[in-house]
Length: 220
Image 1 (cartoon, helix red, strand yellow):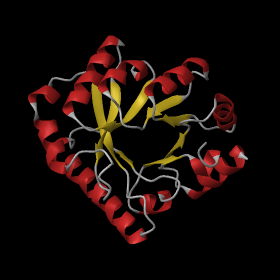
Image 2 (cartoon, rainbow, N blue to C red; image 1 turned 60 degrees about the vertical axis):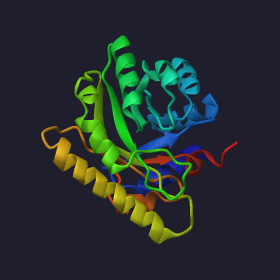
Image 3 (cartoon, rainbow, N blue to C red; image 1 turned 135 degrees about the vertical axis):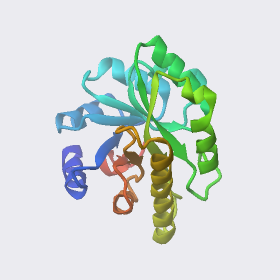
Image 4 (cartoon, rainbow, N blue to C red; image 1 turned 90 degrees about the horizontal axis):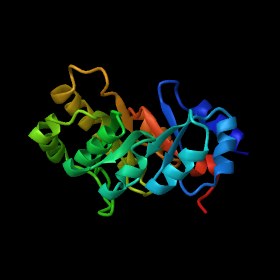
């Protein structure tokens, strides 16, 4: 079942779009099944769970942390996470940098933006991001690399609104790229789109989609 689901999704996304299989709450057997079908990138939203899985599952898995990250939990994922999707403050970034240094790694990060109407979603505004990127604290961080942006659209059936929210994130990406990352070749990721809306996200410029239930079935 999982291999069929993966094949269907991979056939529906262009080659330049990266598929993150959202494996949060899923047992290792199901992740192993997806791995056996060729999937190598998995997304987790709990630090301890990512750590536990990374320690026992194949070492060539690329682990992405996709949930809201508390500073006191960064130490658990710092040895394993190849990309953190959910940077929403300078304080969190400073902690990731500190743990990157402790593990002798440079940790790739995405700035998370609040593009949805729901107040419960986390994320920066464009103004806050500009403030972060021009701060002295940021300029001193050597063990993190900002490689793009992430956002979650509103969880609604209004396709036009969802599309507009994705358009907004693409616009934010372009502005940041032009203002702060023009000289680097590494600011390239737009992580947007999940099981219900990834096709719209791709139409609006997503380069990375986070798909869980369409691969593994509905949440436990």
